[in-house]
Length: 447
Image (cartoon, rainbow, N blue to C red; front, side, top):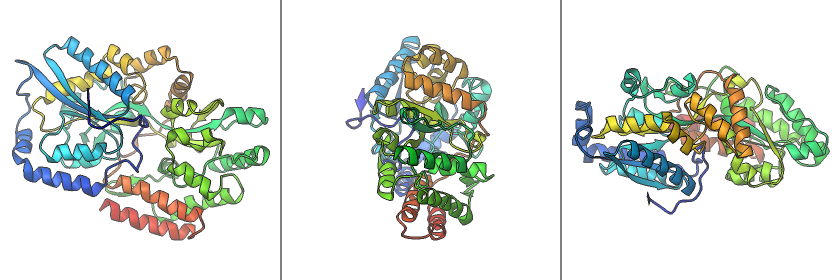
């Protein structure tokens, strides 16, 4: 095991916008890569066969982010692959979320990218558009990469401009987590999947009046909630290479939550900011400063570890078909890898080998292979994880089509939403003014 930095446990769903590398640094890295390693990319474009596989020893480099637990699980699964394929060994590198994409861009620019690397939807499009990742469609079509047991929308969420740029290492979706103990103690109803946004705010107001605890964290700065809400309005976060929403949509979203704050359904701006800035272990639902928080379903175990109260989880408000099978993260193969056929076989193994999937469990989300997911679900022992699996399994019956994989500038789109929403929360500007500033900042980010 060769951690690139001293690791800390990271959120299993995705790095936050504060930990992702700035897009300009990524672009500078790729420009340098084109200058420094033209032969490397040229070789990738010309050949389709591995130079080492099949007639000798193969050593693959693999890079991922996460904590020590993820590292152990991943290493165990890779060791199992080597046990079944003795000619293949691995050079393993991993690190915490912080700086991961800086490191990946540096490796790419230096002409020494890993054969296999973990990536998320913040950067998949950028790497795909610059031909850094291998298009996996031919492997899918030939059956060498078996995705026949994947939910359709989960597979589609790895497609960029017609290219299969990454294979989901696991599935996740949005979840509204609530303090079940608080509600039961006060004789209050639990939120339900399918309640409208207005019904949710009215419910949160009722909770606040009865318990003196704000009923819901204000999610106006949360891109996950905004994205689901947009899809329920017939819009989307992105449409092709452009935004899928306009100023009027953002204004309506900010006004919805301005009204909720005025009704006392949410915390005060300072506490809302605390929830916006905190990692999953300090979300308001576990610190007791709100009765609900807006998270990813597979974060339930981390939340539960930080509170003695019983937690429940349902879909975000509105039509649940606004949600979809989101890739918690992906495995991608470097296009210039000399051993790309073997690298694809490794990814196929991690997704479809029963022993490997059992070893990896739900650390990177629910297993993508539905048959193996069912088996993992049967053996799960963590009550919070069993709850996550149950909820997502139920929601899977109601998921809508996959959203488009975010385009370049996505990290900025997320961080600018926080800035704009907090300006409204603190009363610095009106929802309409914040919406205009936000859309302008987004358009600048995606150019």
